[in-house]
Length: 142
Image (cartoon, rainbow, N blue to C red; front, top):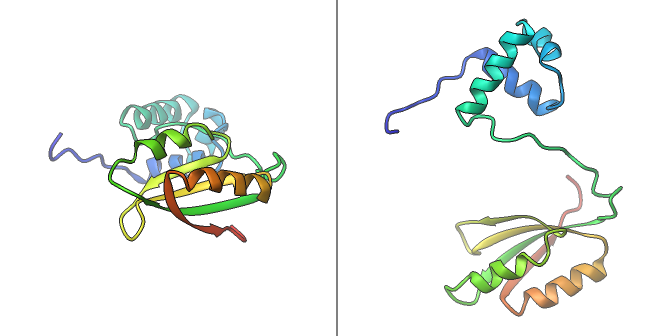
């Protein structure tokens, strides 16, 4: 809708902040933190979901404990305007690809990946280079 603006008050912002830190918190616990009853808190959260402000709940996993020690940011330079072969290639690697951002600037995409080792990274890059050119950066620390 044109001209439609959702206004968030301080309580909404507190709810978002608390859920960002722990999305598994009970509505009763959340209500205690923001000084509302459990049912009132639940109604507020539902309203934020219905407005599309809260889109989903997720988990944060430890990549090292899962065996992924190499975190790579890869700038992608397509060889032509037809990007479908590259995008299709990525679908073969859902366990490695975290995000594929279409961006402005020198490159076309910024690809964020995790790999168990440099050997897997090298294999991935060899196949990737059949579709696009790239520039690799390894994440040293978050």
